Image 1 (cartoon, rainbow over the protein chains, first blue to last red):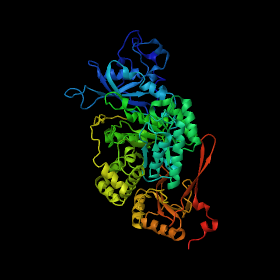
Image 2: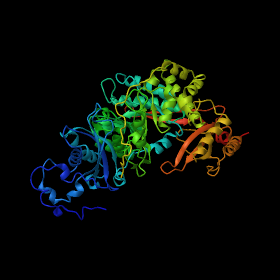
Image 3: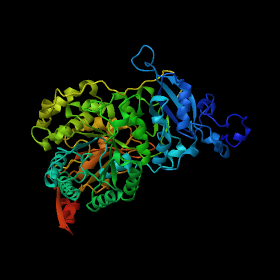
Image 4: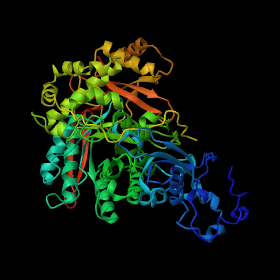
Length: 495
Length: 142
């Protein structure tokens, strides 16, 4: 199947390696007849060529700049089996609803295949340095977005993946058959350790499974990290004793250096914490290091995707979150914020469901309407628990359950702490809403249509739920999403 | 206290008809129901006693309810839970679990603290059920 053994640069006619500048498509980076191998990594880029730049040349340039090419011909290529190192653009499709007659310049989906030899085993840093290292700044492109990536099973198997995974996390929590509930502690800034632990205790005692530090809670003047850890641990243990349930607080161990992060992780372990948390902004290598530590110390790892909106949100440029989610499943996180669809943060429902599939599937099917360009076999890698967090409340329980099912953590921060009767009441309202809706769904009721009735029926015996439904009945965030899937109906995307 | 393990502990106790609907939901998905009971529901007490083995070949919800009522007759003073096992590759674990029987008085848990170096604290959760004498814990139900 590898053809580089038989085709060498020495066979090529003279001209290809003469000094000077060649078009990328003439350097071997455009191969329309190429059939990707099972061991190839495949990317689909959404590219917007500059005025006057041919789409195929632009696609070939993407392949070239994300693999071996430089701007001019180099004779040293001839020392190598360079055909195998060259990425190959093999398909270019026009993106529907762009170009002439629309408000958007013409865009194209460019499919590029990369040989497995390009990538270091088990290194997201190496993978991303290759694929997104240079090409997004390349002048002949006005904009470029990595839409999706098919990772070959051979490469998937070089990553250990999530340290815990959905199945084992549920076994550790002794919690089956319903979504998990969480809340981010508010206000984000200014609470002392003692005051902060109070919020944790109230929320967990009221019925939540988890509480959470926010992404920017590290070790500031108002609350040193050790204080936070000690008071949160007291709060968690009190709530466990009152309910007989396993509970936890995501202790954010994000810090300025890896040494500080390990120190915080060790203290969390010493206190018996079941879970620690990191922010996406620490970088892929730091994520993989902490993941390894978690695997060695039986710790669940929560990932807050802080900062992703800077490069995932705009349709024409950046990296789609579905790709980030794939990288993070390989890198090894147990929880990943993946959107709410109905809350305050960006997310078209079908697109968000696509992210959930990437986190939870054994094999993710091609599903263009959900933005999934390729079938992805996860090779039995553990599954990531998606987290829905941001601007959601108990009154949306039927929508959340219908969109995301049971393997999800629903996080109601304001929707718990902002309850008029207090934090415990807020937590109880969410827990009763969840259990009532789950029970009704299992009984065969049509929760999409009967959801509000089911909630109202539970509110008749649960005053906290009644108050929650009254308080937030008119809250919704109905804005147009900036990131929705576009697809060619007949696309033959996967290999 | 009210032990709130399981999927539906924040709701009023399920009636047998309601339990049957949940059992049917699991059976429709090909899961096998199991009945487990204990007097000590410490959150880390993973292995409750099994009332027989999981009912892999029982596809009729009425049969599960019948077995549950047999268990209630023998162990009605304790906790009983229903667990649904899913043998799908990549899951191979429990998919649903909920409590279907509770003691009239739930003993609950105590939290002991042992202060350590610095401000470190060791926590020990203990179930009051386990404090009772073996004669009381293990005597046959009336």
